[in-house]
Length: 177
Image (cartoon, rainbow, N blue to C red; front, side):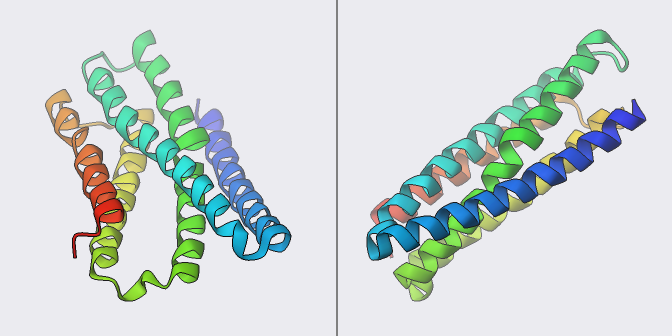
């Protein structure tokens, strides 16, 4: 199992690096082909990446809720480990990387740096990124049978991405300040 875990971590790093390279190359190609008209395309792919990232952020803690209630070493526990690793490494982390890359490019192009609503949005995105790190560490803890948190904890954590998502969408669409 340890060998599979190590290979999984290396594969995850390769996938994240590949998504970084492909995103940068794709964005560069769009800018080269469309110039200023690339902005809405990159914005569309940014939104797609955000949706993918949030899908993982909403589902991973739900998996933890169920995983926390099964005995360590049981077939269900081993199945949850696979599901959690794949969700995090194949969908959630690459989507976060793409979200950040495209979001920073959009910010650079739009000039919203000084907007107060953007500062609030950035704080929410940083909080979401911090939560991503927390969930990554939790995935490792579950994988190594070191989880100490009860299902109730994960039920509460499961609500955090929703609250941040609502705040981010309101800030971006309404721009209340």
